[in-house]
Each structure stands twice: as structure tokens, then as C-alpha cells.
Length: 150
Image (cartoon, rainbow, N blue to C red; front, side, top):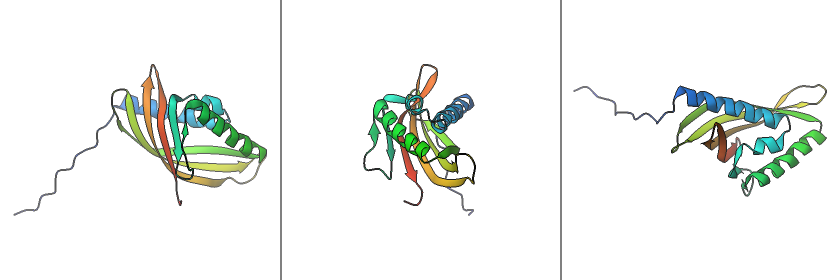
């Protein structure tokens, strides 16, 4: 009797248009971060959004707390004369309720001395988000970033 493989269930998927919107959202989102626009970047979280990292004891909760924390970090980077660039990829997305998706992606952060010098990899991460659609845009309800090697 031939051996049959067990049936595999496919994870739920989203349509191509929604996936493209999510990729555009992330491209703009990370460009705001790289341009030092902490407040505009944080405006892309829901008002009660959450930003957690495995290297921090507590998540930042609420858009204003997320903005303030990111502003401090960006100011510190600028004071040290560095430019950072976020590169994301391997984005997966699946439905997470009406007008919401759950994403998972890799992000690598490069760091270059302002004025010249060699770029280096500063950080490699895996991130998981819950995004919600409000009107014509996407907003981060929850983000958890896991730094590799920690």
C-alpha cells in the first residue's frame, strides 16, 4: 500500500492588493524612522498602540509614549553622528479579523558614520505586528521586535 502524506493546511492569506498596501505602508514607515521623524512615525501606531522589544523590560504603550521614546533614541543617534537605515523583507501577512492583519518580517538595521565611512550591520531582528486599517491607511496596533542573538 502506498504511503500518503498527511494533508497540509494552508495558512489563511490576504489578497494581492492588501499585501501591496502593507508593503507600501512598511516602506513609508521605515523611511520616516530613518529620516528622524519620530512623531510622524509614531502617528502610524493606533492611539493605544504597543511597541515591545525582547531587550526592554516593558513595552511602550500609547502613541505619545512611543513617540517620546523614539525621539530620545533618534536624538542619541544624531548626537553620535550616525545615520541608520532599516531594511525589511520576508514579509508574511494573514488575516487577523475584520480590517486587521498579522504580519511577520525580518528587519536589518545598518549604521553609517555621518559624513562618510563604512556601513555596518547594527542589528538583525524578527518583528511581528498586528496592523489595523482605519479609513484608507494602516496603523500598528501591536509590534514585538525580537533582536537576534539575545
